[in-house]
Each structure stands twice: as structure tokens, then as C-alpha cells.
Image (cartoon, rainbow, N blue to C red):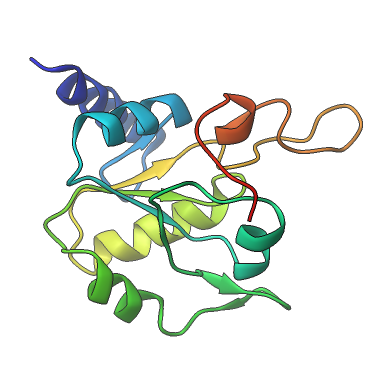
Length: 150
């Protein structure tokens, strides 16, 4: 069995243990490894445009706001934008700041027919450190995975 299949099996098992309403949950390094192994897997960054511009971007990610800035109002076009850019047959990894919006995005996508929807736990910036700063303790940035300033 390939490394990618092993990762997906772990993610599915983790998702079942957590009772998630979508295919599974990945650690950031697992998500990155999957993206390296299979170019057909899609990473959808659901943070706001302000976060992409000011905090940073993941190279190659599809950017679709789940909630818009300012006010963090739900994006009424989220599913339409997802369907326009990602085949429902694809394995789709959802990423946000900490894993909360991406959880909701994965759940909505799963309900809309994306049967291989996964949440990236910890998100891009992860938990706050002792000084109240994100990006140092957990998440995509803290794990030193590829990203660039907006």
C-alpha cells in the first residue's frame, strides 16, 4: 500500500473516532505529503482574502472564502465557487486558520456530494502561544510547510 493510501486510512480512522461528518481529518504534514504524492488532490484554503493577503498563502491552494472579511459573514457562493473549481470526485483537503471554518467547509462539501472531503487540523496558523501569537505552536506555518507572504 502506498504512503498516500496509508495517510488517507489514518485520516479516515481519525475522522471516525472523532465522529466527523466527512471523510476524515489530517495533520498539516499529512496533508502536505498527500499533495506531494498526488497532483489530483486539491487543497482549498477557505480563509478570508484579508488573511491570504496579510498572513500568507499556501502555494497552489485554491482560495475560496468560507466567510468574508470584514464581519466574517458566510459566503453565499461558497458551494458554487467550489463546484466551479473542484471536481466533486476529487480528494479535497480544506484549510483555514485553526481548523474550525475548514471543518464547516468540509461538512458542507460532503453534503453537496464531495465524498472525499477532509479537514486539515490545526489550520494554517494553529493555536496561540503563551504570548497570544499564532503560527508558532501548531499549524501549517509552525510545521515549516511551504507558504509565502501574501
